[in-house]
Length: 556
Image (tube, rainbow, N blue to C red; front, top):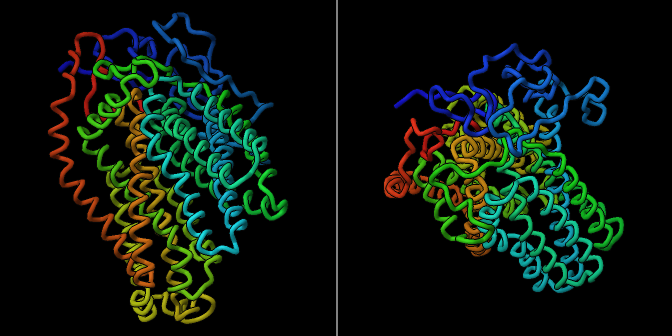
């Protein structure tokens, strides 16, 4: 096989001797020039701006690339317009220095805050309205969760198909505008209980078109070598939105005004702001036709949806690393959802703490998440990402087992090591040291979850072709939501039957571990069966090496 050439601009593999990149049209014969004086990134010959920090490098190139339709770079950042985060100046080495990536992150924080505030605010309002009917409030509160999970499971794959066939930035703008308009319509039509469920279903349905677009646009706005850091920022934006919406915006607005209208209005403004920020996203890698062998993405909108999803599944099943990473990501998310659902009962039954303090008991998990987001990009440069996904998943399983056996674990910790004094004295000694043990275990639980999410998303971005990323991430979200419904019902019923959630945590850990081992054991068989359906690789002498295959895609 002839040697391949990597495009210095987009990372695409091209046949040896090619004059222009088959993806972005860059002149491959041009020699590289000096590094960017601001951030140190190497700049290709003739580049006007640094792809990393946006600094102006040179005048327009003497040649015009073969085809750069849709490609656009961020304008240069002058010294007078240095970007800031609140009152802190953003350093040039940070990804947030890039205007497009900064727009993407601010869009995600605003949208996640609005969606989480809507969901939690609706839950509070339903609980208030039916506070005197304990049997009804349990069912109606559960329906709030179903209204957000069921549409995601049903419409997620459809959203992925549409995202792969539509411009990603346009999809983000339209989805955020539609969600803002739904909030306005809710204010006009009224705030009855039926309207609450209708709004949640509609918002969740539209979100299924925004979520895969958010994931698929990341490798188009950052250099390939910074994908891991970009996914850390994306997960941080999601966590920040959940915190701002659930712990701050919804409780404060509902407490102050006692009604939903002010909260809905604020959420509509946030979603409108998210749409404006989406307009400011400029793609470093242009939208382009699908490579040979991925024909379904060229079909209009919903035509051939089933075939498109089967195509994405076949590609995923034929790439064992990507398949196992997505499997572990889904199982880790399911385990985390079960833990969050059972946390109030765990704090009451195992620790003797009132359920409303569960957020403080598991507060150290936030520290673990932030540590994982900061450490995973550094680890990914030194350790195989698949090992990071596996290690983070096994860490979560171990912590769930330890929480389920918190009584003997606390007894052991109190007898050995430096923790014995901490668990026997002061505030950590509450309930015979079990509260201190739970606080200590919460941090590695959050660390493992963030490591799985960042490493798995980065690996999928690297290995899955651009034309399939929307469907792959939509499938991941749909499978996560679909697989969470049955375990939540079964494990919740088991906890009620046993009267104690600690054995349920052990069952949860063993269940997700068994499913992971089963999937890993059979993935090789599925890979072999599905690989036969792959189209043959294109002849490297024919002009482009962008033929599909399970090898990592170098362009991010």
